Length: 70
Image (cartoon, rainbow, N blue to C red; front, side):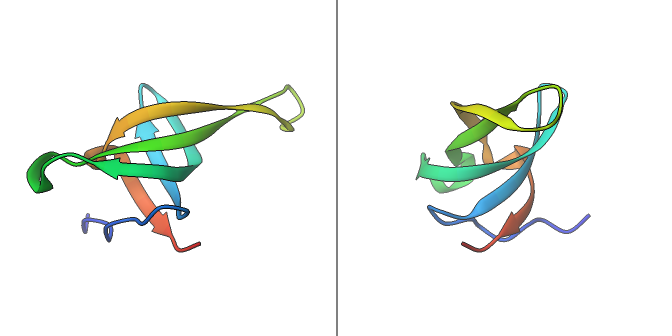
């Protein structure tokens, strides 16, 4: 699988982290170039799929599966 492009703040990314595969919005990118991490807003969904709230998660760049420009 090809490595996704480097996301920018505001981009939407698809992450695979702790058994979760979901879209998240990039809030911050930090760390040394070989160990970048992202702070992302991950939606918490209700039983019918509606977004109830969002949680801020710290994930390694390696958890990013896809990047969609803002």
